Length: 432
Image 1 (cartoon, one colour):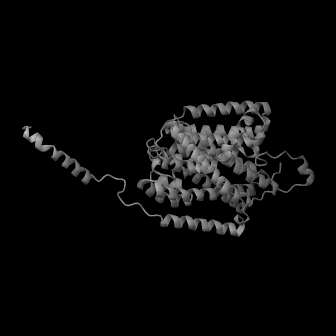
Image 2: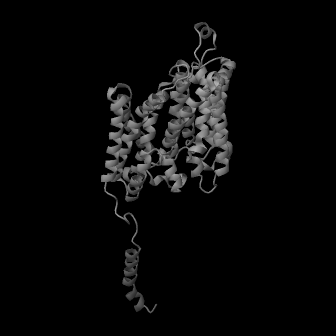
Image 3: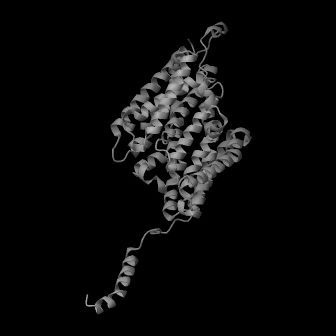
């Protein structure tokens, strides 16, 4: 089948149907996003030890959807992909909400955060703006699982991984499509599969049992999730999914969802057995297979359940919700709220949802869908102006004083000594 080269009208009439990936909105995938972000929120609130796997599910979904869109464009334009337009769409989709959250968090941390929180936010912000937060935390040996509670931007390591993927993977797809001609999509599938295996090998080789931050946040060691999602979006994977038949896909969807749910319920953070020796890889593989089945059976029983409005609504808010939830969690401490447990969690989730909804309605959607100035040269100027504004805000915010929020040992010792001296006379009178 010639997918990318020009074909005659009669040939096009008889060629195999293209995969449905990217041809329409799949509501069940919104529901998966909703489950993913809910898992992350409950994990960070301390209620669900396996909820961190929601990030892995986000990665697989991103790989699937982005690769599907790129390959759809290649099929419709005889193998051509407009990378500039693709990156512009990604920028309009991701950067406005991200910039809003960065600015808001810096101001809120300065107004309400501890000196340690302020200092760390100012140190991390330039790396966040450069979409290199994950490598910054790795280089600093920040210890994601131990010290992220002092970093309002620690959750943005995953956004950095995705942004780096969006920059590099489309370039490789364009190269493979041009080199492969009619077999270009097959080359994309083979490259995605091979890359996923290499990424798995790197994770197993580089894992440090004492501090797993390097393999958990590294773009190279987490690429397999994105690449397995990408593999599921290719024509070979699509033909395999279609060959199963609808009833088989329904059963496979339920089985895969059950396996993923079981892993989420039994995993406990980085202590999950085998997590970095194949566990994350198998989870991503199961997620990719599940997404492929749902994409080809959008009206099956599981797809209908995932398309329920509460899950879909949560999924549509998932990006802004993910951005805002962690700063909200850190700034609204138990002492500040006077609440603990599920009561505090309910308040935190409500505030995070409100911030996400306002960001989507006032920033995300207007710029993404209605702002004509966000396109072309004016869009580029707006992007540069935003970066200048963020940098200026970062530079103008006061730095916390050195030693703030620390205990003065000298004063503490003097106080204890004075207190001890005040007790000495009575004791001396007793001859002790």
